[in-house]
Image (tube, rainbow, N blue to C red):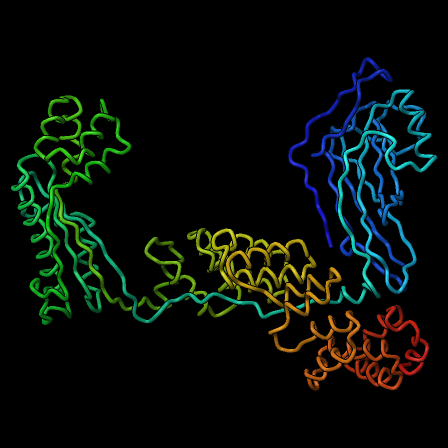
Length: 595
């Protein structure tokens, strides 16, 4: 269990004057200046001895030279509050009190610790951290000394940081063995042998014309269109839209827009018929299953989009006129023409690009070979897609080559979570969990609901023992309608919530987590059933839990067998058994049989 309070930007609280000394104004720590956290397991047990550690840090530049801070760990049991541990921190000018002298420019850190012997069933108790701060005047020093000698809980104004800790039943060391590991999950590239790919191109026309200029045919975009059509495997659909600039008579503009659409469509069909391998195929603009030509129109919408970021005199008025649906095309033009300076800019810069035909060709394209894709990755080229790069990584001849391709995929497609995730999988397989965690964080930022990313994040957090991170991953999964029951059970068991863990695992296949939760919940027969359901498994966790169950049920014969089986497969467990409180009562007998 871990509880953390982060500070966000620290302010210097020199409320005490450098010149007033002990007569300084009252000193008080800002709540953002203190950070605290519990040790990984708030209560660690050694036999029946429990220990709680609270680590604290006070930010630099927050302890005044004449300031005093008292950090107190308090226990609330029923109606009583007791001081369990206390640290005193003083600024460099404070006199008459013994404590840690703080350097105002540096962080001050310490640990509050206490331990006690537990009964078989310990009650729940609340613990909280009290942070008191005040100036080191003679009067305050005298009062503080008296309060500390008397063990008073609140002898001065304080800011209190509270947290709850549950004293669990039985040895909590066993609950800390709760873990789970799922296989890392890669995300497939989705690359298929034949891909449906759209290609879009635009042909521009002169004013009042619908014939394609020779210079337009040689423009780079149109040459790319022709080249693309020559390499297509199959044309699925051709969709053409024609447009006219909104200057002139509406009917003429609409007819002109249709003629431009027809010219664009004919250009595509002619290019297909003359392409190698396609010249014998009967592509026909009258085939409605293949060719769609939408009704042409003068393009007020395109004009509005074009001037969105333009600098035009009286722009707000221009936009108002264009958007006014109650005005006819003629009326809009008339009002705009009256705005001479604005209309001149519109005519010269923003109307010519609207005289066009736009073609979208849906094609079935044969994929690039591995060698072709590698060349595009090496160049590099903007033509290659993220899916193609991921597929190339899948087909790479070595892990190093695959990792290099995935790194380049990250750089070219930073918003695509798949490369980050798949790199993390490689990190996991190589035991590089810290690096995997960073890649998965990036993947989660791009795709927070990805089931693969969530599963991998949970697994990595568990391997790193980052239980706070695991809790956040589980929460995000639940928010996205997903569940990670095994990992949720791990957290619950480590918190001492064994019944809740069993509820979460209710529909899951029998496993060591169920057995562990039953053991900790004092359900020995159910634990035995869960372990027996695992058959002759030789996993270390299964063999260890069988030995623990035998020790808890005082079955010396079964314990001897279980320990011998465990040590035969995993000799390193002998050192663990020598100090494990689970085997305390029968340790001598156990060790005697394993020499």
